Amino acid sequence: MAQPAQFAVRAETGDLTVGIIGLGYVGLPTAIGFHDAGFEVWGVDVSQRTVDMVLKGENPTGDPDVDDIVPAPGTERWNITNSSAEAVPHCDVVLVTVPTPITHDLKPDLSYVAAAGRDVFRAIPKGSNTIVVLESTVYPGVTAQTWMPIIEELGLEIGEDLEIAYCPERFNPGDPAHGVRQVARVIGCSNPDIGEALVALYSKLTSEDVRYVGKLEVAEAAKVIENVQRDINIALVNELARIFPALDVDVEDVLSAAATKWNFHRYTPGVGVGGHCIPVDPYYMIQRAADVGVPAGLITAARAVNRSMPSHVAGVLSDLMWNAGVAAGEAKVLLLGWSYKAEVGDPRETPAEPLAETLMSKGIAVGAWDPHLEDAMYPEGVEVVSDISSAQGYDMAVLVTAHKACLALDWSSLAKQMRTPLIYDGRRVLDLEELKSCGWNTFAVGRPV
Ligand code: SAJ
Image 1 (cartoon, helix red, strand yellow):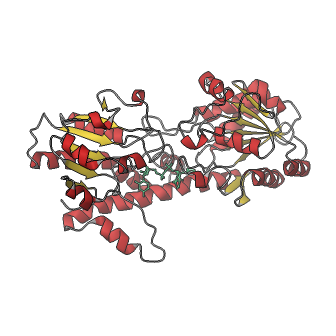
Image 2 (tube, helix red, strand yellow; image 1 turned 135 degrees about the vertical axis):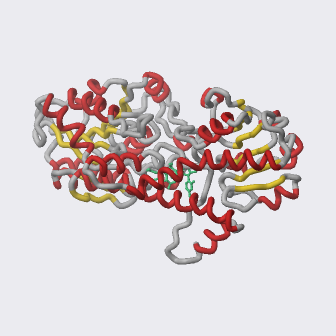
Image 3 (cartoon, protein in one colour; image 1 turned 135 degrees about the horizontal axis):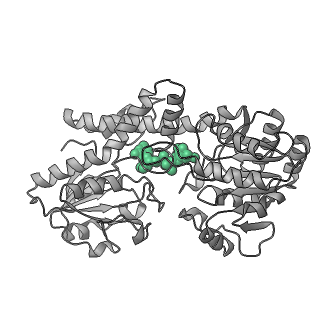
């Protein structure tokens, strides 16, 4: 990599080679975005299946917005491999977009960040001053804590062989209005010149604001708290969705009334909070606060509220079916939607899973229909309904994911297929009056029975 000033000039003219490590739902659109912006791109993924699909111009991510934009085989400036050792020596800057999940005991799993970093650092030519940017969501301090020991172990020098920086991904699956080319970015780096050089680079990727915000930890913290705030806001409406029905008040009426105030932020209660961001990122902040001995009671409590929603809803559904005269041990529930979010085919951390598990633990059979998911993506025990017209004899239909395909169902026909026509709107998106006119007995999260 040239000196920061030259880097910025070369960023302006697209005369840089950009490496992207991890071609998932963030990395692949990022690689395509930089390629479209005129840069030479090297994309790396450890999964041979992913590499093979991308090389064929196919989309391995599951985000439909990526379906038609993967460059065709043989496209210029587009290099795809499973080897960082092959790619990194060609690159002036390397972006790392690997998963940062949580373990089963809700602790941050940084193994992908460490492994990707090690592969990249091993391949950096001495004296090249290659910039390595972590984009994965982590908590403040992780980039330095995870990567510096490896850099020292390999005998590399910051400012000579490489620089490290942090630029959080702000990618929103299934939302073309907020793709990698339309979201604002922040950049953290201990070296302001490198920070500003990266501003020049990312300004070629996105049309929105790009700014250097200071040291790594500032940018790391900003991304985590963006999602912590969202989790807390959702937890508030989920808690209210349990309080107001007990007061014989519909929470949606209350939230819509409150939303007439200029700075009330409207969120919607639901069967739970899924995905690889919102239910995960708060645990990074909780861990970091614990590391320094500062309590994170509110963040922890919000997670507990959102995690409790699937079992709470399962209890409500069981009572509703019992009250409707459905014999215990015979009850069958049909989940409409399984993916964690509308218009994407992604079951990660979906609330549908604990909802189904809790229902099945009560002896209630569970079927699921989601046109965005392949049959193999469902857990054991769930009856996969591939064709909704074949769903027969269910007692309760539950809207779990507000896919357009769910909203567009032929509700009259479905009512006739049910043994007991009970419907529970788990996302507060259905017209319950219309459903009632189709013969359904209607219920919803946050609505009095
Ligand atoms: N959810 C609710 N009520 C709400 C909003 C969401 O129950 O009012 C649920 C959803 O059903 C889903 C989960 O929360 O199960 C997460 O939904 P999300 O809309 O936050 O979608 P994500 O997880 O894809 O979040 C991404 C995040 N983007 C990044 O981390 C870069 C998040 O920061 C964005 O704000 C969010 O997209 C977005 O705006 O859609």
